[in-house]
Image 1 (tube, helix red, strand yellow):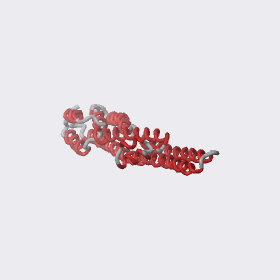
Image 2: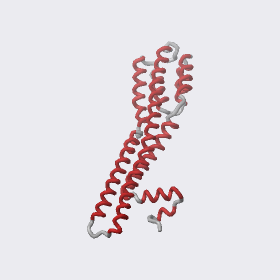
Image 3: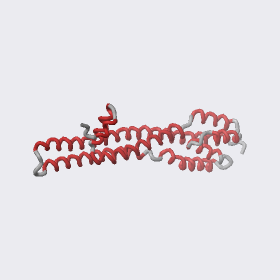
Image 4: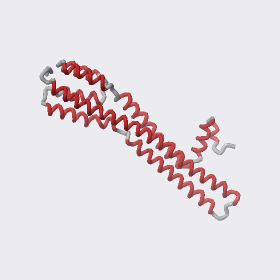
Length: 227
């Protein structure tokens, strides 16, 4: 007879995972909630960093360089405006719109736009590290709670000696299940954090490098630009 009848609806390894999850006790609920939030953040940040905010920097900068060297400011602005609205293109556009101002004002516009756009790249990624740590701690808390529960039950007077081994085994199983699922949530969350944080830093480096390149191009070709 199934210990947890609901698990009978799942085949193979899913059945085993269900059995272990149900055997983890009440602490499995916050662990699963943390895992769910981590999955949502990973999906949202992956779409944002690898698709919505991604641009071919080399091709983008090469086209801008060609247009600025040719003294074609209007075409440069139109080209940048026609690109997807990413943090990189928004920063470059802010600098190009100040070409008729002094070099210091162009630099200020680039810096201001950079400070405005960077939080859009960095947002929510840091929560994955926190969720990895919280999941581990919840698993540890469930382990301690399970051990306290099983030893307290065994030590009660009047407990049938034949049941003591079963009570002890169930309590230890609950404790170990919490530890296992806490780590199952924590490890992917921390791996995802490292990958997304690396991508975030790469995008930030691209923005900083491109903004300096654009400023240098504007300064070097200011006499050619129609302002």
